[in-house]
Figure (cartoon, rainbow, N blue to C red):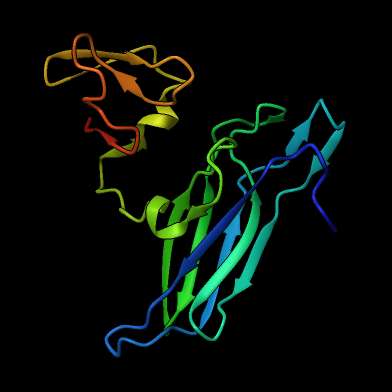
Length: 169
C-alpha cells in the first residue's frame, strides 16, 4: 500500500560491504518508526511500521521513506530505528530524514555511536526544536532560524549541523 500523497518521501541509498573479504554483504536493512504518523493536511494516519529492504547482489539498496520532520505530519523530529543485518552481523543505529534534505546516502547520515552508560547523546538538529540555547566551551549557542542547527555570536558555523551534543550528568 502506498503512502498518502501529502507525506514527503526521501530516497535512501547505500552499500553494505563485506568485511574482511572486501566483497559485498548479503542480508537486509530495516527501518522502524517509533510512533504512528498523523496528518491534518491529508486527514490520514500511517500506523507504526517496519520497512525491510533486501540487499541487492552487489550489496546496494534503495528505499523511499517518510521524512522525520515533515511539517504537515506529527510527530516532528523523530528518528528511525535502523537494523542492518549483513554478513552474519547485526548493527543497530538511528536515522533522521529531513523533509527538505533530498536523496541521501546512508553512510553520510547514519548514527551508529552507542551511548556510554550515564551519557545522553542527541544531534544538534534534534535539539533545535527543544532547547532555546546551550553553552559549549563558554559560548552561548542559539538555534539558527529554520536551519536545524545552532550558531554562536560572532562564530557562525562553529557547531556544525551534524555535530553531537554530549550531556553527561
